[in-house]
Length: 118
Image (cartoon, rainbow, N blue to C red; front, side, top):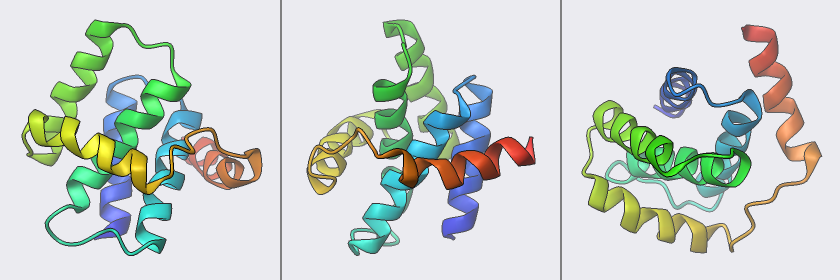
């Protein structure tokens, strides 16, 4: 299910006009959670959604209505409650040890793959 979740993350990001670098960051956050063993069947969609939301907030210059639009899309695509997403965003932030700014060498491989696919 992880590749299909990443595909959903990418499709949703494209719908919301997020940059490939934002999607790449979301992938890195998501993979870090996977490697930490934080993902399970119940929370994997929330994890994916929170990663996209955090990446968008940190790497894009989003206005309030754009963040709301992104949350609406996440809620619709991954079929979870926005309240759960907002609460889970903090859980993910703690799991990532607040380290949202990523070194280039972690983001670049995903970025190259994404830009070659489009």
